[in-house]
Length: 97
Length: 392
Ligand code: SF4
Ligand code: SF4
Image 1 (cartoon, rainbow over the protein chains, first blue to last red):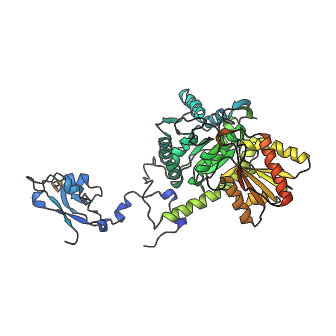
Image 2: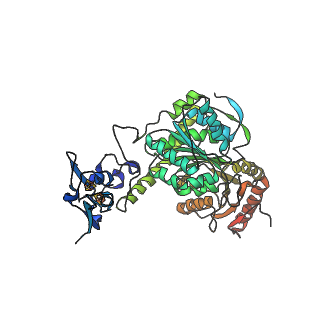
């Protein structure tokens, strides 16, 4: 992507379009990757609420897989996930493993 | 013609703010600027203005609230002094970086420690690099007139940067002098309506203020900011011309006093310039070619124009009511830059005076001019930077 020159920028670094964070792929920052274990998922959607990067996909009110293009691997979802009978439905595994 | 009244500098500024009737003011009281907001608060409670007055717990919060209100799309004003401005410092940069045209009255006061409530320029000069437009005022009339012009310059579509109008604490803020007001409708027409660029309250066009900008773009934003503040020089002159039409009072980038053929020049800011002009007259009566330059627009600094005005001087004495400890005074640095960039090399001395509100007397100006006359004769200055009016 060609970077803009100083005359082409929006004054005061204002971002004029809403929701354009989607264009910024933050997935490459990840050191740990959340993995969804569907068998332990109770569909409470806590992960969806807590994820700071909207990286838990949901359709028709049901949890889908992670959006790894944007998930930064912070682990908040895994921490909050109640899982089923003490078994987490999200576990963090090191990238590259 | 507007009414003429005997009034303090603070009252004059409060009156100007009343006539501007800004959308939002967020402020925290601090001597000697307190009276501005105190009076303005009465205008708010009496319903004379429609302003939303936000009383906050600190100056940092005051400037933060001003930033929020300005980003929301309002015309925003505040006032402060000394430690208050120092506490705002972080937010001053943010207001400028977000290109928010907030207007602020700065009643110049010394910085602690030791604590002191009186007038000097260490607060204003300390915020020199914050990218605020800075306009200095000699007296209440200038402060009053400058407030309207500052609003216009700050809000100009090609600038959109915050502006502060400075006047000396107590010497001007609390002294009563006679000055002339503009009729309300003249002020209304002169300042016009504020049209914000990207107001947060425009819910049909949502925008984000204050994002993270990394090395790939940060310097481009700063270059744009630098170009914007540079444009303020021309806009200041344009606005002054318009202001003269409605007020009959003329302003420039600075005031030249008997400089045309001056071989010796002094540079004096704010109220002390009034005192020094009388002394210049006395020397002129004796046939000595002395002149005075009183800066008005300090940021952006009009280097070429200042060098041009000081062009005939072989010796220049620069007075600073603030120090950059371990360096030359801030005004000296600007004048020296102006002269060097213009290719001329007068002998220049720097005299630090009046810190913490110490009176600047005609004798002080006289002693320095005498010294300059000697330097003009010998071509040599023994001490480049020195404090004056100090007990041994
Ligand atoms: S690891 Fe963090 S960013 Fe990734 S899905 Fe979980 S909460 Fe979202
Ligand atoms: S928080 Fe855990 S249990 Fe709840 S929806 Fe997400 S993955 Fe499933």
